[in-house]
Length: 165
Image (cartoon, rainbow, N blue to C red; front, side, top):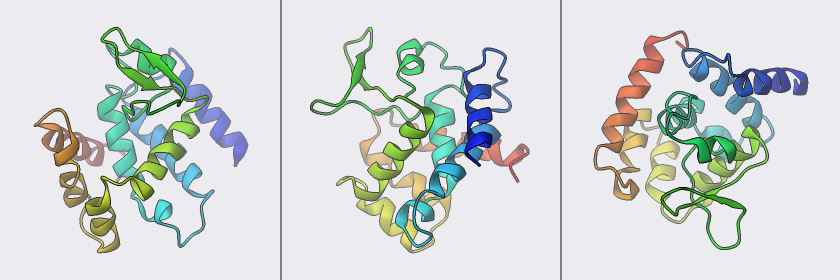
């Protein structure tokens, strides 16, 4: 399994990686990372497409268009650095959290959603088996873009229309 994740990582890193394949490839990596957690853990309850949709939006479907700093930081979810976490400084002065691997970025995001103090509503929605659409709506309070929920919902629908069904 580790070999498969490595091959996928190489594909993601490749300049020939197609943005059309990003959701499928990234989703596969999310699923592999989730297998590191206990089957009854909250991290395993998070729908991989939830993580994949956010990564797809935050990275312009894996192209990191106009986001070279995020690409260099392997930051797939738009996380800002807090305290003395490793970071790269964006041109706009934002401390963007830096990761060593794509998997580290995913692990950190799963940890944030599992333990972050702002995501209690999300955890309630997941535990109540609410739809992924309802789960996206729990993020609206914390988004800097007022259309963020709609952007996530639209991207999710695009991904579902693709070959991830």
